[in-house]
Structures are given as C-alpha cells and as structure tokens.
Image (tube, rainbow, N blue to C red):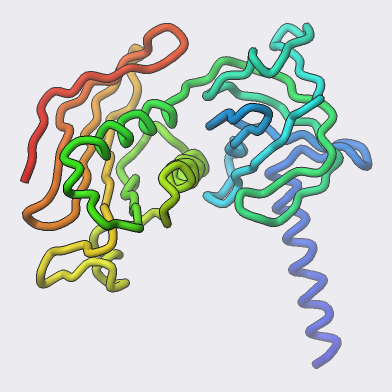
Amino acid sequence: MKRIRIMLLIFMTVLSLVSCSNKVQLQEKGKAILNAKIVDINETSLLVANVAKDASSSDIYQVNIENTHIKDADGSDAGIADLKPGMLIDIAFDGTIMESFPMRLGTISSVSIKSKGEDIAGLYKKVIDDLYAVDPGLNYNISILAFDFTKVTNLTETEKAALIYLIGNSYKMEAFASTYDELCEQGYIDKDKMYFEKGLLITIEDTAISNKNFMFNASKWRSGLGAYFFNDCTAAESGDSWIYTIGAEMIS
C-alpha cells in the first residue's frame, strides 16, 4: 500500500510538471517564457493573463517589472511607458512560479512586446464602473460582487478571472464568478424574496468582434425590484482603445 501511495505521488507530480510545461515555455535550465496578455498596469506592477490554450482561470500573475529590460516588437529597447493593457508580451524568467493568487514569478530577466492586442477587459472594466455608478442606492451596504460572464465571448476564461480580481481589488470587496442559479443554491440570494442581501450580480453578454465592433448588454441586479440595465450597447475600437455607446438604459 505504501508503495502504491508513493507511485501515485510520483505520477501526480509528473502530471503537474507536464501541465506547467504546457502553460509556460520551458527553455534551458533556469529559463522559461510566459506568453501573456497585460490586463492592468499599476506603476511597475503588471496584472497579466496566461494566453496558453490550456490556461485555466487561475493562471493569472502579478508581475513586478521594476528595473527589467523591456524590448519592443522590433527588438529595440523600450520602457514601462510603452506597455499598454491588452498587449501580448513574453516574460522571460528563471522558471520559478510562486503558488498564490495571482501567482508570482521568480527572477524576471526581460519583457518583450509581441503585439498590440485588444483591451476588451479594460473596456468591460469601464462598463462595470459606469454601471456601478448609476442608481447608487442598489449598491447600499454591499460587500460582494458576483459576475456572470458565461455569455462573454470576447475574453478568455483567464482574462475573465483577471478582470474579476481587478474589480474586486479596486472596490475592496469579495468578488467571484457565479450565475443567478448558483448564487441561489449557495444561499447568497434568497430565491423566494428574489433578493441579494449582501451583494450585486453583474452580468455581461456579448457578440463576437467583427470589423472592430461588437454588441453587448450589461446589468447589475440586487433584487427582483432593484436592477439596472445597459442594453443594445455598441463597442468600437478607437485608436489604441475601445469605446462604447449605450443603446438603451432600463431600471426595474
């Protein structure tokens, strides 16, 4: 039995190493590359989402790039001011990953800009900030922000997790992904009274990007008689960022 347990432990360790190697490009000993998208920049700290195809919602990283060599897409030297949310970057580091949330990397040797990318997370952060600001009475005495992004197609699962983390950090509240039914099942929402006593459920659904435009709806819900909606919104790329217009606003 002891031997079986040891073999199982070895097997699980190998699986873990294989999983990590799929999500981070391992090079020679002591070197690795993380392919990531910048979600937020706070002075010398980057919040990034792993862009590997098999990345999970937990594959987000807080990266300190103070005194780090930064290279532009053409290989020339660049600075922190050249980094923008939405950019795709390669982060070269020593292969050490510290298990936290967000995760952290060991010694970083360089950051290379690969392409401009799309800052849809930044757009949705703006939408959520605007939605939170309207009808502030719905926000009274809340401590939880729940997000239903199940019908968001323009963000990866990792980007969704990074956005939720960013908003929770910004508003100093507990923030997590959940649907209405899940909140009812977990006791957060009183299903009979249709009331989310301690929080808001924020929902976004969108269409795929086409010709640098897409449509979306967004809402915040506190109760059956307390909700606010941004409907038939149009998002459009404008220069290096995205802007949006609201088709109709509704309140219940």
